[in-house]
Length: 379
Image (cartoon, rainbow, N blue to C red; front, side):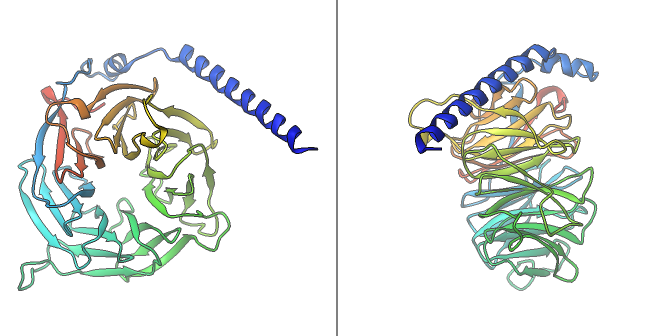
């Protein structure tokens, strides 16, 4: 078969795929029989008409002197830890905006942070290729700093993401520029399992994000610069359970859907996607039309789902934060155009454990807490 014939077949196959995608999209639209307001009513909650004044910025957390790169909530929802380019971790009281701890790091190039499930320790990682653990109850040293209680070393590249295993203060998963993820025993500082690396089913580029399934903590998903997301079982480190394609750029962020059967991704290609981990199918694409050069499209930096999964929050390099209806794949609100919005790239975001508040972090050095008026929860 000649090259010309192969090209013709490729063009024909591409046209067929695009036609099937359009038919599938039309079929989905016919099956969608509800909207956000109707769904809220079905859950016994107040019907919500989204507007620029409905999800409001109720607090701005100021204190960092550099770009905010990462944040995490405690399970009890009243504290937030943030990591910044200024080389500090700050623990905030989300109810009062007060700083409870300010930790100066040995390596200022920090990229990720996470609370332990008991809220008594925080972890962080960055360009030093290590993950440092701090016990917030430790006595401060002569300089007023909290000493490092444990350093997890073993990665051969920067640590870009870390997350504690739910309900297990002694287990932590990290992802790295060395193309691997590692499950750690925090008590001993030893690696329990390495995912990827020399194994053929592992990532082939930097791993930028991990998300652990709260319904089954043996399962976690990772996103990478190889444009894929991969599903892992901590009991089987030798191979990925599944590999999910579709993105045309780095997968910067991954997050499990509340039911534990699906997960979302966000990418440099400016789209978010929803995958079914059981079938391996892509269920939905969340994409906005952008004018101008394709090289200038905003990238998705961070995502989070509401408690019910009906809403998807996505932060972008443009400073926008879209609130997507996950069923309709429509933007119902843009926090980037709201009053008191961020003035630069949104680098991270996260939802409180009870779904009552959203926190966003930005390169404008600030964090903001958003909540519905009237004490309503994010559905």
